[in-house]
Amino acid sequence: MPSWSKYSVTSENIGIYEEIFENVQIIDCHTHIGLDKDGHRMTADKLVKMMDRDKIDKAIVFPLNDPRNDKDFNVPNDEILLAAKVYSDRFIPFFRLNPNYKWSDEFALRVSQGFKGVKLHPRSQDFKLASPKAMKLYKECQKHNLVILVHAGFGLEEIADDLVKIFKTYPKLRMIVGHAGFPDLDNVIKKVAKLDNVIFDTSTCKIFDIFELMKRVDYQKISYGSDIPYYAMDVALEGVIDTAITLGKSANQIRKILGGNIAKWFP
Image (cartoon, rainbow, N blue to C red; front, side):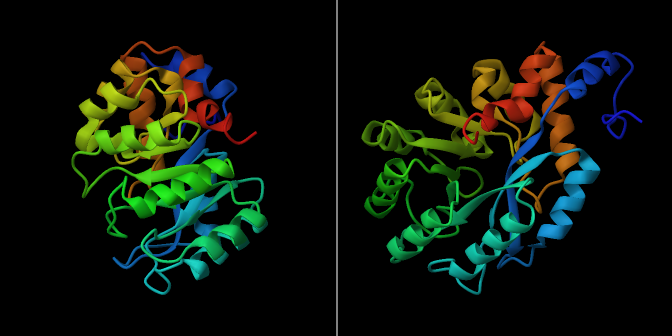
């Protein structure tokens, strides 16, 4: 049975789906493990089962907004470390921090353990994207060549100018703009989309936002994400593929969006 057979492929799209899945590595660049204050949960074992079901090869994983340890996230970061050891061929580990509290010891520990990036959530941890405390953290991430994945979706509004300030200050910082910055999508695209060290993830974006993103932004700066456990991997994947097909993207370009673009940051 072909790997794409579980998806709702129309007769017109069978050919390009076959070509896409013939030689593709799919990386979900926005997934969570652990417990959230809002009641959502996800285990590493369950996530891998979902990945197997939906033909996802790898995932960037980081903690939810864990109520047990939301100042330095030491406990949930330990859970990510364990998961990444158990599933070393499936998970790309990111640790989570709160810029409002002392984070230097936790940062140094996770760098020494080989984490690949940092997840920041300005809404949940109540900080401004370009606040002085957050800027200190970006400085360290640039110094240690860690990728930042920043929540840039629900709960935020005008964020483009903050992103501009961050990249002007730290021009070598690599950032995944979570949820593609959809609350301020037009301005974000205008002001930061041409930067080499920015990738937009598609997690929980509405189809018309994905359409706008793919129409206006170089496909090499877009990466598939789901936001598990808040959204279904397969639904998110189909939305990205079908939108890309509608816009005339080639199978090779779509493969880059599904995994190739983000893979280059994690050789």
